[in-house]
Image (cartoon, rainbow, N blue to C red):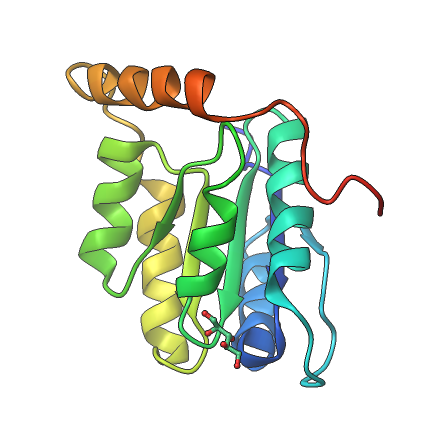
Length: 160
Ligand code: RB5
């Protein structure tokens, strides 16, 4: 089976862990596009979440990874995009279950909250666990219904 394309983005707080994850995933044979940022200089995380969310929505089957200090801000903004199911995870079990039950297309991680080997293990669980479908389709359908009513079709930021 073809490995999904992966888009990865971060702010200053996620930069160090992001570098390790890009190397790890590339060595495992994934196509990884790093949308930045590329240093620990202070940036605003919503811009990087927007880049990854838009890229994932435009590339069928692609998945995204977002890192800030805690993963929280990234998860909040990523879930403002229609069609994005971003999961903030702090354990391998959560990473596995969010693939199996939520079919999450973005994984959010806290660069200053988890160790690098824990992050590798979480990524493996998230990327290698298939969505189970079945009864979980009902909940995902309800989320889609909510998006249709609650979300505008115009994506922020409108100018790049
Ligand atoms: C930046 O200092 C920090 O607020 C950010 O990385 C993130 O953790 C926000 O949720």
